[in-house]
Length: 264
Image (cartoon, rainbow, N blue to C red):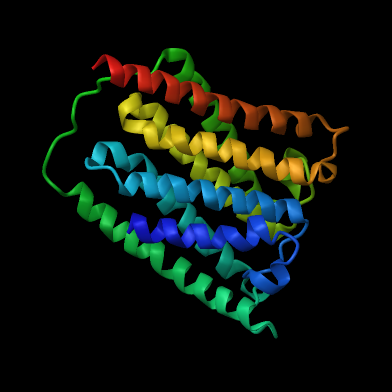
């Protein structure tokens, strides 16, 4: 299931991250401004790495950090899709847009249900977790917990009231895109919180790789559309600092994780 999901999110990221200014023709709904499409595309591609890396693990303890995050994100996106179904290209004159839209609808109606059943089945499997062999330093755990809190708070605010919460974001969001961004923030926030609780480099290595890719891809998206941000607002600089902290935490974590493995 994780292999299938990784392929789907990679494909979803192509028209968003590559065709940022042509989402009216190649995506399920028209995403404006283009930097929002780039943000969503970067999130999909980072999620592709997350799910693909999880699928390659041989033990549940090393893969499970991805599953609740993916389940929550897909469920929230399904709800947002159904709430704004009239904004989607279900009957667009563009044949490709119609195909993508109906595929999107089928995926987000099916994946959360299927993944939920698979997760329940996995949790019922007998067995125990291997011991923690590479504890995460306290400072990094606090940083991860803080990042998780920020993503969860901003994500929930955007989901509940994107108009009111727009001051939390460095560029303009519509109601639909605000809630789509909120779903991603909650999903990544759950993943970061889960990794903090696991507290072991060996169990969250896939999350560290994802953090590096997420930070790098989002910074690349920002570099493509720097004028979209309102730089006179402090939130724009906070946003950049937050992306750098994600990239930095992932990179430092991977270095420490590699050192921990070499000592075993």
